[in-house]
Length: 116
Image 1: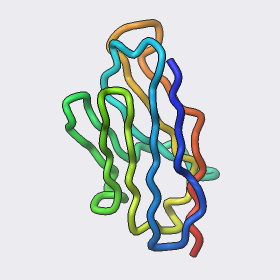
Image 2 (image 1 turned 120 degrees about the horizontal axis):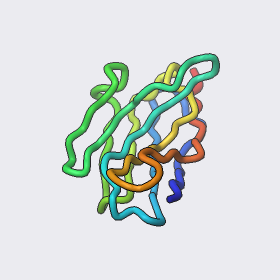
Image 3 (image 1 turned 180 degrees about the horizontal axis):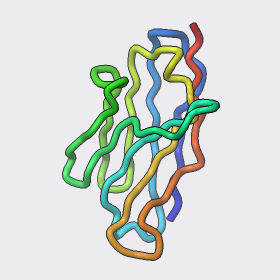
């Protein structure tokens, strides 16, 4: 299984970015997908998650600004609006599986930098 992310970059405060993540390979048992982020010197934290049925969950810090969505069952997006400098981090996509040798796969990460 591979997760390929795209869409990171540099944006000014108040700007928007859209991240994409596509899973490929043996994905027949794919379940939930989501986005985490890790800022320098901090632990990786959940940003948003979406189940196979479309239920969503957001970190309090991004509610009302970020929207997670899913296309088919193997692609997840994160629309980020009203970005703040504290959103600066490496963003990682994840995919969970109900069977197979590994229950969670991660993408390689994409840098998001918000300038003040």
